[in-house]
Length: 201
Image 1 (cartoon, one colour):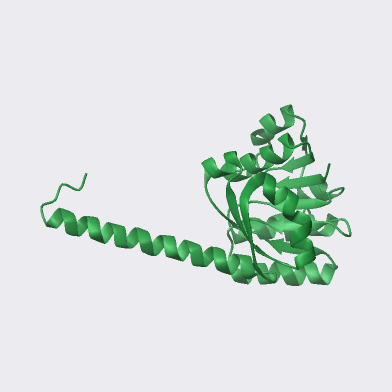
Image 2 (image 1 turned 30 degrees about the vertical axis):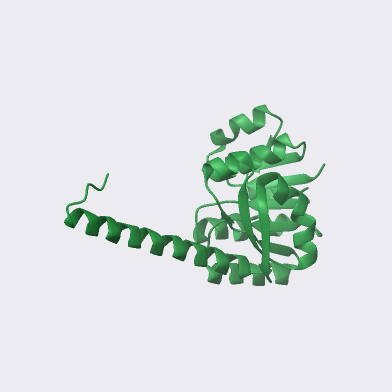
């Protein structure tokens, strides 16, 4: 049983945290709107008052939040940020889709504090999160990534270690870029079909 903190319980975070809890791990959760954690708490999770409180005894910490600003607040806030309270030896995992520049800022802050950071954004949506079929795109030191393997396997079906810290965020943005191109091309082709008199439906 691993002591895990999970920061951010949106559509994805709730489902990822639920899988870790159902696998028997000691889970502490935090969310900006605490009522969202009610279902997890009813199944045995502990609710923290802020990110720093959530991580104080953790071995592994996952973050799954909206964007750079939310991630920065969760980790680096002087009053409640998780980094200041992170125990020595714990591994922090940023799963949010954020910019590479933000990951570089986080990495520098973690290095200065003597703490471990892995960036592990993912491919997949709600059904994959519920079924444990997410694909993790991971950047970080090999020893840290290997230590996270059993937890990644609870939440996902594949782990791609693509390089050092920050590499995961780059590959995730590449994947998003590819999806965007595919969507744009599909729209153009449907417009072409419609203009040609074809029943698009």
